[in-house]
Image 1: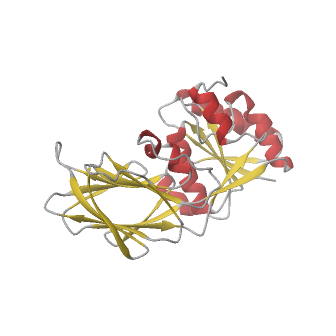
Image 2 (image 1 turned 135 degrees about the horizontal axis):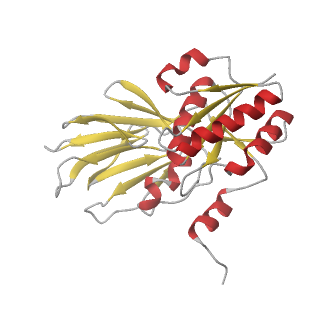
Length: 269
C-alpha cells in the first residue's frame, strides 16, 4: 500500500477538487491519500509518504519540491498554471499518472538544489538566490568571489545565482542561458550591470560563490522569490550546489526542449 500526499495551491479551487479526486481514486485502489496544508510541519511526515503531488503552477511546484527534498521522496507536478516548466501532468491525466507511478512505469529526473548561506543562516533554493538593490534609481556594488578568489566587483541592480532548474526563471528574463535540468551547474547572471562586462557565467557546483555588498548602499537577499533580509555593506550571500538532489517524476519522455517549443510557440522555418 502506497501513501501519496497532495500539496494544492490554496488560491485555486480546482486544485482542491482535483486533489480530492486523486485521493478518492487512491482509496478505491487500496492506497492512502494525505493532504499537506502547512509546510512548516513537514518534519512530521518523514518516513510516512511515498510520493508528493503538487497541484498548481510553477510556484506551487517549487514549494512541493522543497517539501519533497526535505522528506527525500519523489515529487510529481499537476499543471494548473500558465507556463508549467516544472509540472509534468495535465489535470485530466492525474489518475493515469498515479497508476503509472504505482506500477513503477515512470522515470526520475534528479535536479540539483542550491545551498545558500545568508548571514550565517542556511537556506535551500530550488531556483535561485538573488542579491538585489533596495534603493530605486541606484546601483549596488557587489564583490563576487568564485572558489574563494575575487573575480569582479559589479555595479549593477543585483546578481542572480541559479540552478539548472532556475535557469528558466529569473535568469531567463535576464537573457541568461537555459540549462538542461539534469545538469549539475550554477549560473551567475548580473541584473542590468552598469559596466562593460555583462555576461553570465556557468559554474561548477563545487565552486563556492560569495556575493559581498560593498560601498554604502544596502541590498536585499531573496531565495526562490522570498525576501530573506535587507543587509547593509559587508553583508554576504554564499552559494554552492547541494550533493542531495530533488527527485522529479517524469512521464512519457517529455523534455525541456519540447516544453520550450510549446510555451514559446517556436516553429521550424
